Image 1: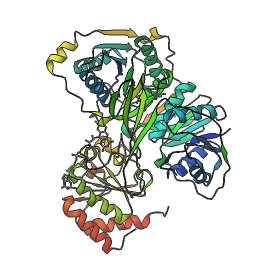
Image 2: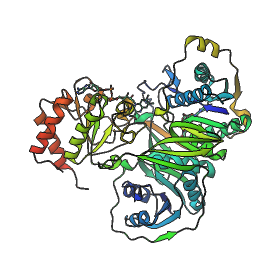
Image 3: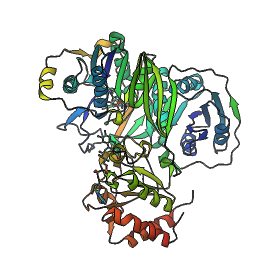
Image 4: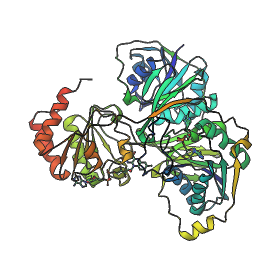
Amino acid sequence: MSVLLLADHDNGALSPATARLVAAASELGAVDILVVAENPADIAAEAAKIAGVHKVITVVAPATAETITNSLENLAQRYRVVTASASSVGKDVIPRLAAKLDIQPVTDVVEILGPNRFVRPIYAGNALETVTDPQATHLLTFRASAFRPAALGNDAPIESSNLSVTSAAKFLAAHRTDSDTPDLATAQIVIGGGVSVGSAEGFQLIEKLGKTLGAAVGATRAAVDAGYAPNDWQIGQTGKIIAPDLYIAIGISGALQHLAGIQGAKKIFAINSDPEAPLVKIADVALIGDLFEIVPQLVAELERLGLKR
Amino acid sequence: MKILVAVKRVVDHNVRIRVRPDVTGVETTGVRMSMNPFCKHAVEAAVQLAEKGDVSEIVVVSIGPKQSNDVILTALAMGAHRGILVETDAALETLTIAKLLAKVVAEEQPDLILLGKQAVDDDSNHVGQMLAALTNRPQATFASEIVVKGAELEVTREVDYGRETIAVPLPAVVTADLRLNTPRNAALPMVMKARSKPLAVRPAAEFGVDLAPRLSIEKISPPAERVPGKKVGSVSDFAAAIASEVNEMEAL
Ligand SMILES: Cc1cc2nc3c(=O)[nH]c(=O)nc-3n(C[C@@H](O)[C@H](O)[C@H](O)COP(=O)(O)OP(=O)(O)OC[C@H]3O[C@@H](n4cnc5c(N)ncnc54)[C@H](O)[C@@H]3O)c2cc1C
Ligand SMILES: Cc1cc2nc3c(=O)[nH]c(=O)nc-3n(C[C@H](O)[C@H](O)[C@H](O)COP(=O)(O)OP(=O)(O)OC[C@H]3O[C@@H](n4cnc5c(N)ncnc54)[C@H](O)[C@@H]3O)c2cc1C
């Protein structure tokens, strides 16, 4: 029995997190990938390269909650496990599918203990729930950041399905953040800026440090609410969950809801003027001082060390 | 337009929770409880739509123990008209919550159902989407803006790549994100007035929904603690520490 994994894509490209999801799903069986898109060919070709993928199925339709749910519903009876990323798409469709199939889903899985035993964080990551799912079919979402990516080098067959799916909801417009920084959810280094960065111009300083290290850039909710950073940069309980090797938090207090997004970081470094800030207390390395003085010096120092990545 | 808003009573988001030593759950006795923040944004959205006109009634519903009356009263003080408590002391799964709400929807026939996008205790982010499926309605989740255009809503959603705008025909289900609005603090006269608004209490058993959980929770355990690190005294020491981390990183 096998596993169906919904592939995330954006702007015609497969999500960089997909290889991690394939690795997670492969722990439960042979993986088929579903791509629902208006032009699925290129996305499917990328997905077919991931090791462990048995087959890629494509459905031609605009990707809305209803078209994706209906596609999954049509295919679900062939699978023992139906999974997606705990991304904005997976969160939108898996519960909808669950109600249609009358299955209680297990979402935001960060660890697979067995064929039907999973670990998921609750209370913004302040507690971990170990769940056994005795249902015949499992509906899951995985936090990509909790899994190591599968290798590339596969050439799985691509099968186009002639399913016709419709949606009452209509897509009108995308408001995209133009940025050439790496994907937050899968980046190896992330720099986060808080509300004390003070302005959108201030965030250019953070981005400059990001460029020096080849890092992705994130922000706190307070910084996003203030309009200093775009909403898709938000890290935390209601934003993105990250698990980089190194997270550098600049002018961030370390509220519970922000910490929820960074618990998977291997190392946390902090720059803060307040030695008592909660984030400073959990940081592996902290530097106390004014970010506006420190960050430009830090960029210069890293360049001097030849650390440009 | 008639609006139904679902609100949940949860451990207050400012409380630092503690996992019980016997790993059966999180300590909730004697802990401050309040309305789930996302639900507050949902109530505020309903009240703002009513203030713009065109809303005949706002009904709020909560499922939980008797004390969940408190969060219904909060919603009534914010401007909702009528409350329903579906009373149960059991911890229900999201699918069960959605099935109970679907029964309330069948009775109330609202044009718009507003929910929070997630509850800050279980962080499931399920119920709105499930309710949309059960009531066969389109959904617009993670809303940061709602505009009424005749018999349709234009909803801007917060998604991983930024934001997107979709159109959903009514009747529909919308779940609220935090940037949708700034919830009001009800003034004292409104709080007093809320007590005289209708609030029906109905046992969950009355709805004919199987309340038994499907999943079994083996344990609730605390996350691994981080060991405290060190403070460095200069930018060059900080840069050197970054360099040493970068050198240890596996090339991906
Ligand atoms: C013994 C025990 C077993 C449990 N088993 C499970 C389990 O197996 N799986 C599981 O997911 N949870 C389980 N729970 C947790 C359960 O109590 C959750 O409250 C329930 O699953 C709802 O999840 P949520 O609040 O995170 O929903 P979300 O989907 O995050 O909530 C989104 C929105 O739905 C609405 N909503 C949610 N709950 C209510 C409500 N009660 N009344 C009105 N509106 C509401 C609100 O508008 C809310 O903003 C268990 C708890 C215990 C103690
Ligand atoms: C339901 C809910 C969900 C939430 N979800 C999220 C979420 O997903 N993500 C999130 O981030 N937040 C979230 N929040 C908000 C969170 O509670 C905090 O308000 C927020 O994280 C604080 O952001 P901050 O650290 O930028 O600001 P502050 O808490 O104001 O901290 C600013 C920090 O900057 C330091 N500082 C000031 N000036 C300087 C300087 N010149 N140089 C160096 N340091 C300086 C200060 O010492 C302080 O530590 C949520 C809140 C709620 C209620």
